Length: 179
Image 1: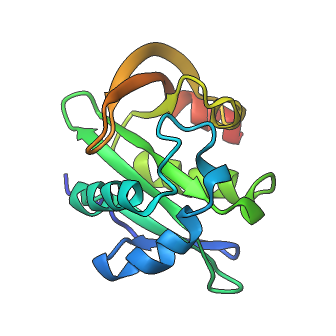
Image 2: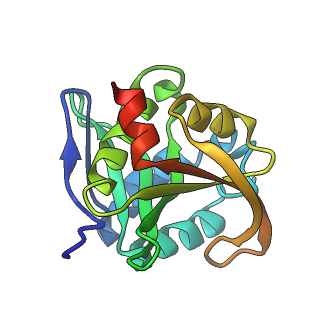
Image 3: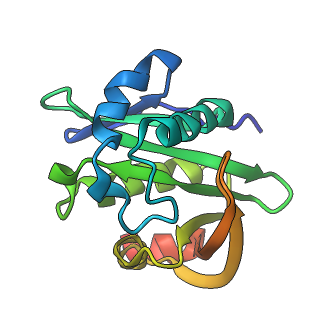
């Protein structure tokens, strides 16, 4: 089966498209806000050198998506698919950040819904790694029905391993939630 980890996904609110090397400066303008990273394992990712590592890992992943507000065209953040496993019929969604003006509304849930719907076209389970102290993201992922299934050390690209919680969402649970 052909798996597209860099699709164009969109609705009336947002658009996600493959991240390109020339997106760095615009994305860094969003990611340079220290408050975005305050609960993340790498609290210094707002600094240019740390963000460069994040961006390089995103490009190399071949699963990163640039997220923009469809109405204004403004860059809102980035997310990605990674660690696709044909054998386990799973894929991870993560490395997500969005600008603070998009927090607390429908932007993040809709972004995840589009990604999850796409993923369930080729996997049975979607996984998420969330930093152990990132309460904001843990709460958000619980709202969509994902369940914590284990604690794992995760070494983000170019960074030391830190404790993360892995959340799983099955195709069946997603279908039940979607009604």
